Image (cartoon, rainbow over all chains, first blue to last red; front, side, top):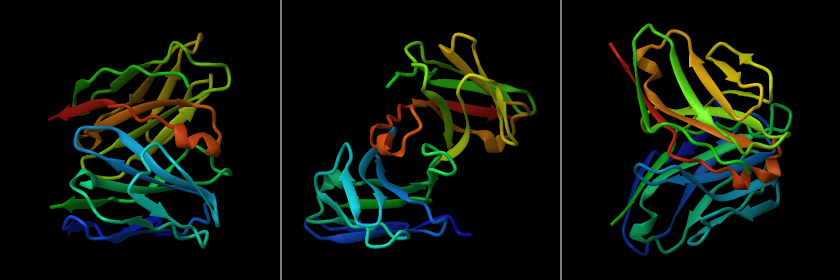
Length: 114
Length: 113
């Protein structure tokens, strides 16, 4: 049981490039989330999903896109990367069975845009 | 959602109990108190949650005052590995509302040898 797995762990992008952060969970959790955390700050929700085929915007969705074609995977797409997207990105999941607000987080993906 | 107030930082000696306070004076009757921690550069880790009764698990104890306006997370025998930022969050346990989960700056706990 690996929990929540994120790839890559580190990435450097040039301004205007695009990339996808991968997130997969093997706990059969319905709910999945993408957060970003800027240095010295709390987490901010980018997008979330309550099940396959359903996604919705969080607090800071601009510049990102997501999809949820399976229960396990919730990739985050960055189009036209900007320096303001330099951050650490965390994927998380939760299950109504274990408590909807008990989130399991991945180890994070550190992205730098130059 | 109820707001929470936590001290910015705290120190604790290794082996002693660490008591981390959280004020949530505007908490409503159906809101739970959740605690997470984030060890440097890692993803946050769930610790414990409760509604009104005190709770204990293998990681910590949660003491909630009778009026529910504040709570204390207790790490009974702090170790150096407990050095982390601790977040207190108040929420109605509804996954659809997780989009509104507000993560503040938490309390930075330093456990000293």
